Length: 72
Length: 194
Image (tube, rainbow over all chains, first blue to last red; front, side, top):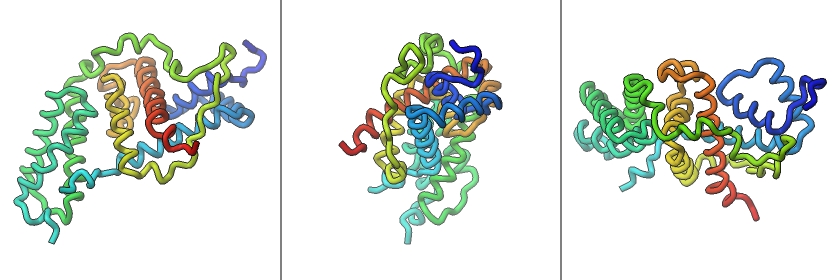
């Protein structure tokens, strides 16, 4: 624990923030902490990209009508 | 001439029943609720016949009606929607599906899923996505689809279902992580170059 660095977050904390961001707005301080962590971390940006990919996938899926299943 | 025009309207509408039922089941996770929502959708459609240029336009219209009927059903069943089977999940850490070291670092780097633009519009991908969504525990699956398919806000969902925000986010975030894991195992691990 490093209470002297209020903006420092672990990868686990950042993952929780990235997931939370899909469903709600983060407080300003968390957004800043997230950005600072992502700028210096190798692993978390990958996780962020996975979530973005899922977000795009869900968007496409909402618009998708499975017309091929109609093919007789 | 498109074949959609050659059948009477009621038969055109009825021919989409299986498709609608697939989504109603995925969202409601209850056979009776799903059948009812689809029956109400078909009745509503038959009550105000419209003419559509193509089969897929008719289908899109029906899906729109179905979404309203499903939201009605979820409202009607309220708290019941969140009852069943997930109690052990509510206690657990939503992040348990990702491996972390004791110091909070990733135990292994998350995989690079590449740039899957092509994948995301393929029929096979949507089949995997649907299968993964259907494998979520019932309550998580309902909440996830309320967000992602019905596009309801978190506030609306909590209000309609009488859920606390904390409970809601725990369940929903678990659903997102499970889905992530399922897609990785069943799609991205396959698609990634060796």
